[in-house]
Amino acid sequence: MQSAAMHDRVRIDHAVSMLRRAGAKGVDIYDLKLRQNSGNPAQVRNHLSEALAALMFLRHGARVMMRESPDLRVEWCDELFYAEVKHFNKKEQDERDEVAMRNAHGALIQVGNTSLIEGRQAYQQISDVARKKRAQYVDGAINILVIETSSEAVGPLGLVDVMAKSAAREYDAELYKTPSDVALRKLNGIMLVSPVLSEWNTPSVAFAGTQYPSRQMSYELYKALMSIVSHLG
Image (cartoon, rainbow, N blue to C red; front, side, top):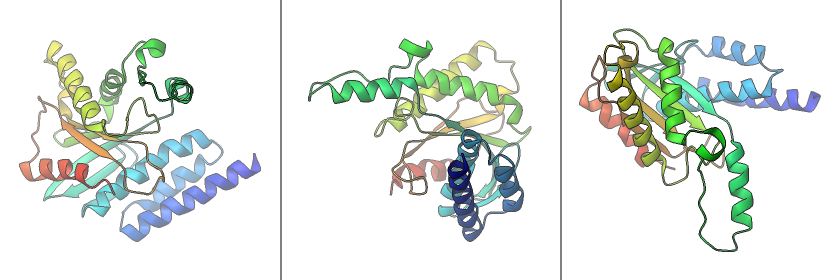
């Protein structure tokens, strides 16, 4: 237990140090939030996704402030937007896929089908989270949801773009059924950050815009968000 707590402190120190060096604002409050959760490794891991997302934007020239809710305030391309960040843990399906691949001996097998266990495909689960986060979207502002995933089922390498677009289309389809739902119209898009070898390396990223946002982002900002896709590091 003590070693786990020490591991958390090292990870927190590293994340906070990198944010400060990169010029993020509001780091003191974020640092305090992490340390208040230092006895809960899962919660620390969830909050570290906020640092990963912030560093991703900072490295592309944005100005970022760490917040409580939504998690990030970002200024980029002469626009202001807010980003709510969610971490997806590794799933039971990932463990089953790993076993199946080890036993496949070179044969092709199906992986990533979360519906068999959880009743919902991965892109549907992303859309579900986007709807559940409705209270975090800021009125009259540009809002995006950033999902950083430890699950290959949610963010398979090489397919993050397909997954993000599928999730955004699912979100739009659900919103189309209830067009008067003002809260859901605040979301401008979903960004998916795939599993990486190192938490602080540049990850694989994909952004997909929603069709019915109440406030449109500029084309310059849209291009900038899409450009992160090509910076796979």
